[in-house]
Image 1 (cartoon, rainbow, N blue to C red):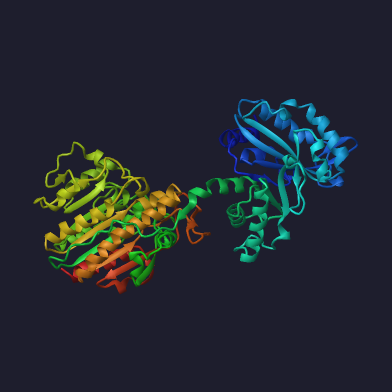
Image 2 (image 1 turned 135 degrees about the vertical axis):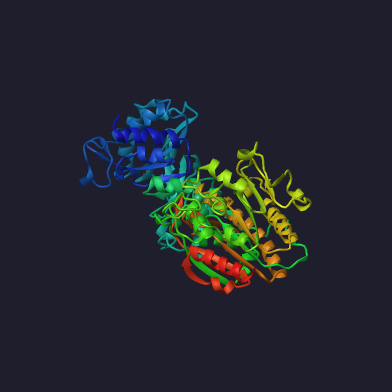
Length: 589
Ligand SMILES: [Zn+2]
């Protein structure tokens, strides 16, 4: 098999049977006619047809005719293949034939030819349907019913209708008759109303609708599908099908504020604290998705000190969470995959070391495993973020006072020397042990959209109460690792929900800061994930698009609240976050 055939075989195997009502306009002009549209998942394929010397030739104009491009070669033979091959189990395909020559003689030759392919016209295979619809030069509407059942017609007006509507397969109209819209921005409300009226009129007759000469872009496909147009006209069958097939996954509802808010108890003690909240993978578009998907303002939106940070790694334009976490935790740029080491591999002091030296307590709350790249950058040192045994050994030795995280399986048989591993999160509030840990899951915690519930706000509150009771200053890292996960997985609904969940925890910490004025809260990210954009939306939903399934180099926002927050305004490197935290600790011993 040559490469092209292998390629077609593979993608056809994946996508045939999908039916997203995409119409491959002027399909014969594609580099691979029929197969490209079919394998992309098109429900309708258009072929121009010219009757020349008794033969049906596929071309737009007579001078374009090539001897090999007969209707039989380009369409009937491939249709016969898909009809007879077990490879293709089900499809419902419309072949829209645009007659360029007179209706009667062209139809006569077409019917004679179709009779030679009985499996395409006898309708015997219920799972595999092909319909032939005549467009372009058609007979008079009142003549439609004189043609056999396998021939139907594309009606092209809403002003008159034939008596026998059964022979009308769909209605096609020129887009420019209703609007000059070029597919950028949005339709005027007047043009939108005109289109809706005519679409409703056609649907009221029980018929499907297509417009030709439509703009061909993501914005156009989104708008046309929202208008309820049945066949979306395109010259880009792959891009259009891929876009529309996944559109519903990317549409995020714009919701009322989630219920279940916690309130921090009144302040019992006063001590300084620096709290770093990391939304792993949270760029400006992720923040926007959180803010714009909730109809009431996020807690985060009350913060006035805002900065932008550069996340580049020592050895790569785009950082991973290991180098990104290390920069935040140690103030040094390092190589991707390195945890708590400089670019030469030397162990670095972390913000927890600085805090503990200044008699601060330390702690970590994360939705990730405790040995995940971001949390481990605060207590471990390894040349590979996946050295879980090595990172685990550092955790055992760590002086941190509390951790609440996933990833318990790796520590199932661990004997903890100086730490009580509690078996429920509420036990953190009652234990008299000085150092505690809680594993909320054996592996990773689920997404908020898959049942994580109020884990993150609850864990945040338990950690703050535990550290406050020690009546000494503290440093706490709180991470939502699932914003990064939803970026990698291109899960739009999860992404918005994860940012809103992160914001619940942010709200609690802001309450804490309000009652503990010697506290600095920093909310930022290690990098952006997913190359997210928010191109479209309505009052009730918005589309989240992903440019990537990996990290990007775009700057990430930083929000600072509380004591010294104004020092974090501006544009700077991620390493400066560490510098500001150390300054704070040294000034508030
Ligand atoms: Zn990531």
